[in-house]
Image (tube, rainbow over all chains, first blue to last red; front, side, top):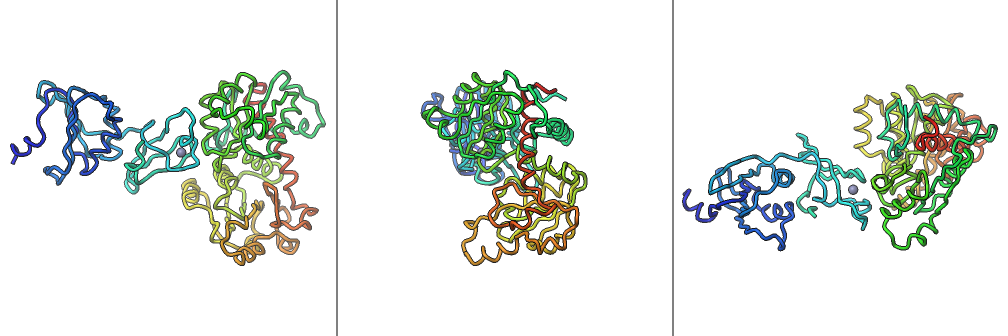
Length: 156
Length: 308
Ligand SMILES: [Zn+2]
């Protein structure tokens, strides 16, 4: 079984593997990292791969180690994701994503009357909170609106 | 305590101690606001009034405050603001006006605009109202009125009218909770205070009760803060007619009032307070409008640093 899976998700020499992404969120992971067609590194991803704890998505970025702050944003949409830094085919670092306390320019404010949705030269800014009852919530630092669901749909 | 270069964006940025200091300063300046004493405190200072939305009363109140202190006013009223800045973004406008003035009073229709302006300004920003969010100078003047005409500590206050959309009552409730108020909320069910605000108040151990009838509570409060209920909020005109009469202060209603009761209203009123109330000792709303001047004088003087 293990070999079969490795065929699907080929090992990389150097780079970053984001594993245990909530199934269906791989494309949003690329968005949250700001990865577009202009990005030069080779990226491969697998959606709905079988894992020990049900299906998951996996993203591999070859030849590039992303910064921990960048990667931690993934926690907004997939709190159980792990980050593996690969050098010379070996995992040199394996971390769980940590929810950042502040994000800038990542999510759009859902208040249409918010100044951050106008043409002003500013980025959206949110403080991030996590609570038992409400899960992850984002508080707009401009208009004070709270986003507690549909964070993935409001990625910039 | 120094407020020099401090922005005035939201009531939540101020502690009870700071609020008291601002109200004390307003009280010292009150004779100047009444024209009984002359002041040159703001001599040589230029205050820019940048209003992207018409609000004549707020603008005039600031203008009066600045001029009573001997300051000069650059009045970029709403019409001028849009034509002078020809499509320029607010960030650039703020950067430019910062070069012309020592302080900017901003009123703007977008939520969070004052917060953003403060990021780009090199002089202090006083928020004269941003979208549906904050209007802190209104809350300071409300607090000042309550302190002058009644008392702040442990106040028994009722807020009546549109409690759902009324930003003035939201931030006033928050500020009063710093003084341990007992708050009664009087509104039709359609216009109740949002739950999250009630929860916030309860976190501060504030006693809240809710009702839809003024006659139930009028004998039991020291301040009644009335607000306007807009007809547009009601899909059914008949519902509005019913509410209109339930939330109306009349001479009759006041027969059961505590003799020390004070009635406040941010104005303009439509028909929620009958004219016969104006000449009673309960009526405080016109004096409240005046109190905006010493309050804004205090904020201008503190933020420019001419009073420390
Ligand atoms: Zn916002």
